[in-house]
Image (cartoon, rainbow, N blue to C red; front, side, top):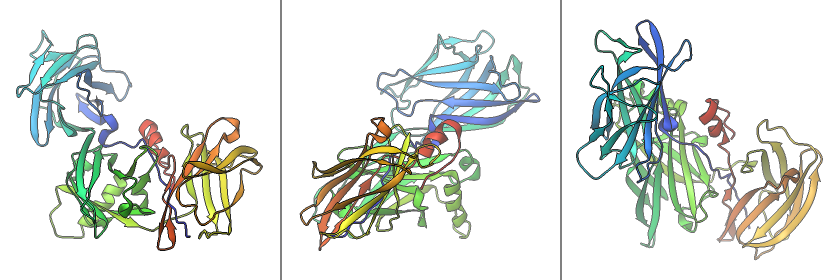
Length: 445
């Protein structure tokens, strides 16, 4: 038997705006402001959701108490609504109630000084109609009318913000035997369309609208799309995947596997950071063809794997690196599982780390030992036998007596005398959590 492997990851990576889009600089009467637009990435049928708009003076860092904006919102290039909105307490909330009606209705108080809708934290403006009833990208156009009772003399520039509502779509596909396989996409950016699985090429291709203009791309922190399919769909299970966008190869870090989040599903993440998107566009510039109006994603099977594997505890306090020697595991041979236990933040090895090393085969525990890694790492030995195929889990339990654990899960599939292993970990893209909070990038690969 030969074992190959791949680190599988989960993440809190989201998409365009991460639920919050900030217009960093708005010049007005020799002052400089920033405008933040916030809305949930998921809208509940109850309608208890809000768009929240806040304006900050970039010099004093104070909230601007009074402002009036002309706000237009577009979805799939269609105008949903455009009207004047104002507040006198620094925060403009707009309550959204989706309905099946074709007409958009705005309700609330109106400013005594203008025709704008006046929203406050205690009494928000309410908009009812076919708003945010479907997922995808929502485009905001904002024009400043007044700030702190100072009205602009002429029309100001338009400022833009784009936020997404997560869209999940099922795409049933046929396998090589003609059986229906449930594929699903989950997009944190815009709607996915024209999904196709090619069983002969073992390849998935799908499309998503995308504006490649520099002005639009400049405020896109990340594009994130997931592909879901059953874990028991063996013909598309592989130690690794490669990805393309519009025929251009993606960085290895842009395509990751997650067997941890869903019990019965494999998830493959496409995560494109801003520099990755710019890299793709730079390849377009070498051609005389016009810029496309979409991203065409291609997901293909791949055997390109690297040691060590990396997995985090759910708290991300600890990181475990794992590899083994020899790389090819044969019955009757002793395998050395080599590991390091690290601090999840600094990545420094943690000396005198206690742990329990466990191997589980087909749901049954076959090996358990408790030790202390004096220098923060070490190795454990195990000998596999002929009939040890199927799901295999290597766990590190009770790390440093904290009760925390992490695992690497193998789906062992016998085929022509070999066994392919598909490994899952807990989180390689923990950096995206840091990115969400403080905009730093420390990608661990």
